[in-house]
Image (cartoon, rainbow, N blue to C red):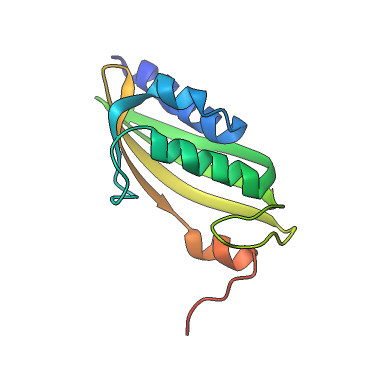
Length: 137
């Protein structure tokens, strides 16, 4: 596939997080998709669907954007911003009503028109501090 086609697949991934539409996962993730950021998860789209659903239950008025995207061969890298208001339970944390912003980078390997592998790095510490969690001493 072309680099532009691979970037379009990565854009659909961002759309999935933005909209909460987990049906998109079946369109863009390989059946044996591996998310290296969650090595304990079994292969396939199910675990990421659960994370997208949980995120949208915990955060309202969400907006996800790809700030920039780079492609080479079958790899796409994107730097993203995720925004939302913490209005529901998320990862065991009660709602705070606070606006939060998360930035990160995703690296995707695309094969046969689907994302086969994902590596993600996010600023989780800043995110946690925004909802009032304290860093350990």
